Amino acid sequence: MNKYKAVVIGASTGGIEALGIILSYLPDDFNQAIIIVLHLSPQSKGLHQVLSRQCHMKIKEAEEKEKIKSGVVYTAPPNYHLMVEEDETFSLSVSGHINYARPSIDVLFETAADAYREKLIGIILTGANSDGSQGLHKIKEYGGLVIVQDPFTAERDSMPIAAIAVSEIDYILTLDKIGLLLADFIKQ
Image (tube, rainbow, N blue to C red):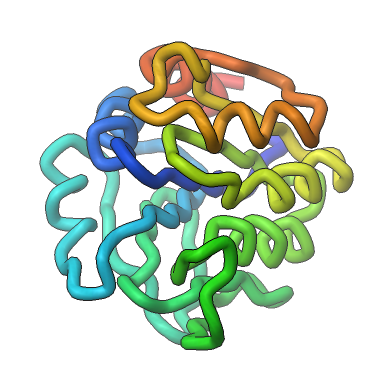
């Protein structure tokens, strides 16, 4: 039985393409929840629809108080922080920007780490700031698995480099290898 219950993924510049590659490797019977924060304009809409073209799993925008289910990909609504509560439901907030962003990757990662502890996988992808590095560090402190996109393959390497600088990383991989690694987890 797989020891992980959820995967959180954070991305910024170049993130739509990066997420599309990873999600394309996951089978429709992938048995974990995937929760995504992507830095986008507050006016952006339909990220889940764009990603659904490359994803075999059900994908939707997270809603307030929604129960998190295995086998579903959730995206943060534009201009809201997305948080995971201890009872494995979502909450949304319009509190101030963190790391110049709302939604903030650190907010998602840190709240998800509190809820899932060692049963969480955190992934940092391409991006031009350091958002997500502190949250990834917290996931590692709880005993979760942490993965970072190889900075040499990222459209913007700042987020992967910042994450590598503050935490012991389990895997530094290209996007296709991240997708293959996640897909292998359902076979374990």
